[in-house]
Image (cartoon, rainbow, N blue to C red; front, top):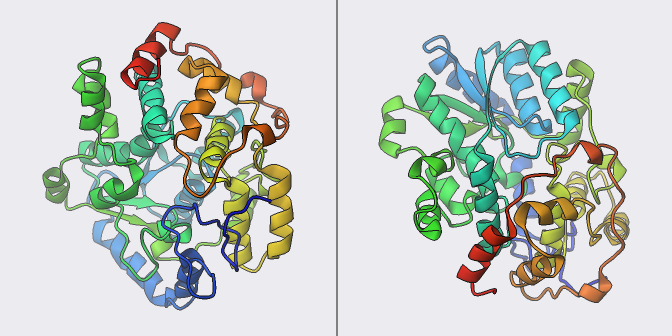
Length: 397
């Protein structure tokens, strides 16, 4: 076991963003969940009903629900349609790595609930460049995904004149950017605070020095506040109004909608509901391990510990088994980025968060191959010449 300080209640380590330990060694996320338990959820649900009624029937759609097809967005859509009979516009920003099962889930869910669906797929040639740039700069290749998921639905809200937008769980469930006793609006402040990694779309244009058209990055930019205020928008988390319980919610959408889980690289089999929509999730987790010394199993089991569903000792044993393995999907990522494996490790390790130190020699065996691996798109990556141009700009060649 690595020598990282971990929360004495859950197992979140000191390299987790926003983490602070109290004098008992308990992290601020665990303490924030205690705040959640003190909330008057009956009053919150009344507020939810009042909010929906302010907008119901006044526009072509009562609300917009941003949607990946994963557990949280499916639950949000199900809850609003089932309990409040809203007419939503369901909006998906396609990050480029959707798995076959999530596509089938989406078809079932949309047909069962009877809703309109707006699906946007951004320019893949632009996406590849943005991925490499953000990986080099932040050690996170998902900038296009982070920003697109949270900004594109806001452009759709303006286009269709739909001011009410419902997201899923509040960030207080997992981080300390906001707490449960704060009003968390999913707005530009939140977007700039932790969604866009500190890089906005205009920054990306500057990085590429004219290689991108400003229209190329519009889906990743937040709409002008003036236009949103004119719309009288509200962008909120459903989890700010109802208590969020992932296990119970997953069971309901499985029973009611036929939603099916999936295995994810290096995640225990009992978490087949988590991050099943992206076949690059294994790479993202592996980079996190290189940078911070922990991955998704720590995150998931910490949630279970906070909700008294798992013992801490059991969780510590499981992360030894599942974390730190090289994912099979890494070969796909390297092809997309035009990188060698050595370049990948050099870049990822340059973003390590102290006091964690990744040891190449201790890298565990490659993870098991997922059943749908052959169906994952593997072509049309950056050429080596395109990659080298970016690497030279960073002084890496």
